[in-house]
Image 1 (cartoon, rainbow, N blue to C red):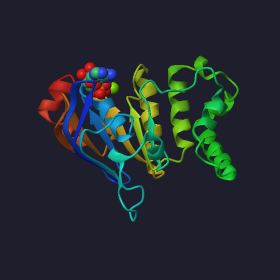
Image 2: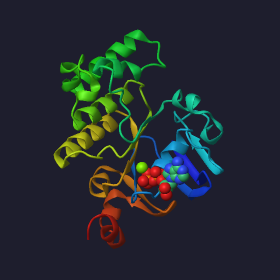
Image 3: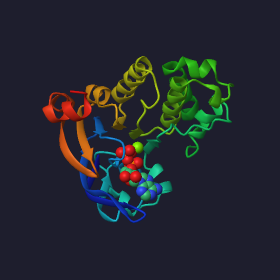
Length: 240
Ligand SMILES: Nc1ncnc2c1ncn2[C@@H]1O[C@H](COP(=O)(O)OP(=O)(O)O)[C@@H](O)[C@H]1O
Ligand SMILES: [Mg+2]
């Protein structure tokens, strides 16, 4: 569904991604793990078209039969319209708007009123707290609730591929666990997931496959279980 081939990205004069190649198949949860500064956010931003790809290719096939789109030569606005959604680091909710207003923002590219209402109902069933707090200012929600709102808002765009940048950041372990259960559920409903995480323990448990990124280079890949049992991965990312 998504394929990065030899992707090179610069930030200013800094060469951040050095030939990153990875694949996400339809229906998968793929994790990209790595230390702070490895280039995880840069990778997602390149896919979303928020950073230019200097060399290499990023192709995306929203449907199995469709012709692949060359994201590396597309604008961010047109990329969003293809059903690819990035839930940014720090969740990116609008703190001054209400919960329900934030959810509607997720559907800003849609004009199917009936479908929007149906999705809103689904999201309220999945996250009852977002229905209870519909009129509350989003900035006053707890971290976990804000993460649910960010997920709900992403789902309002009916994404085919959902990319998440460190959803566990700043959340208590139990909250992370329930957020990851929700991610598994969202994936079972047919949404493909690319998950960027420093929290390797949780990410490798959830993911079907994973890649390790070190200083802008993919150094390892395998199933979540393979990497979780790899000695080098255990030493570097799983605390022994
Ligand atoms: N705006 C920027 N200008 C120059 N370098 C940057 C900028 N943003 C990030 N970088 C550098 O790019 C590298 C990768 O950053 P990032 O993709 O945010 O890593 P990660 O998400 O894995 O923590 C880091 O070395 C960081 O210092
Ligand atoms: Mg990051």
